[in-house]
Length: 153
Length: 138
Image (cartoon, rainbow over all chains, first blue to last red; front, side, top):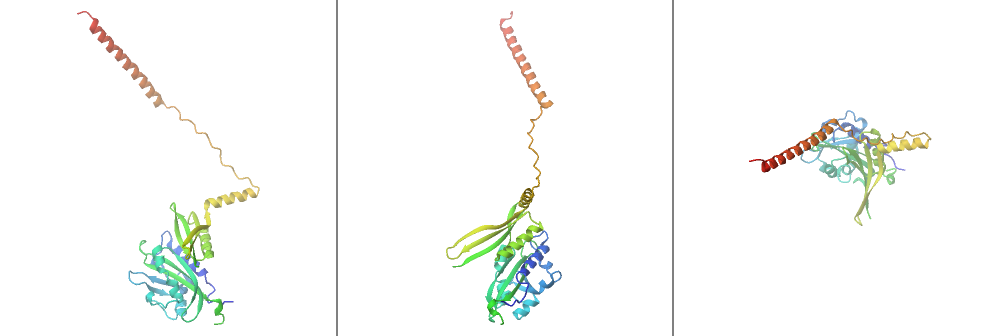
């Protein structure tokens, strides 16, 4: 039996998607400025916000749970700086697909982190736009649990 | 062999289907489609499964969930019929009545007949004049 890191695994992405839909209202995307800790409850700690200002995408917000799980608060850092095959890197790897398709996408899977920790994760990336045309940000979220053969690790 | 599989939620908006979101998990896609359907935000929602086989480079799509208002109405009617309740029949179709002849149409027809009579009379007068001119006294 696996040891859950967070019992909200999987459902978190649906809650985030529901919140994103609420923020949308009649628009195709909510604005980057619409996303705030207020109204997100415990989802805020499992979320991250990516700024797209024409340069390299960077984290505007890196949730407290992610900062602890990753080992560093990546707020203000470029996505390029993420260590490969970590939860945060896997959860943002498909950003180009979201930018191309301009719709919410959720992917999950299994990965062995560089630390040797094997996790089952679920993530989601939600597009944001302040002018209704250009994507100006991404609201993301992810959580995970240790894979079955990591019991007692 | 690697079989790629994704699930797209499509919503019907402004007269066409649009891709709403993409999932790699069937259960999550179905749960979200059900939530969208219950919200009544869109008139219809469906989940399309897309597969692609890396080895054979072949793929396919199939709809695994479809829900529209019309289907809900049909389902409700079927349920009522099964429960033995009489479903109200639609009103009988009425044969369309031919349009009534209007006064203006009668006036037009009368004018045409009158014009033909007058024209005919003028032609007869013209012919009589010509005959009178030829055979009359000098």
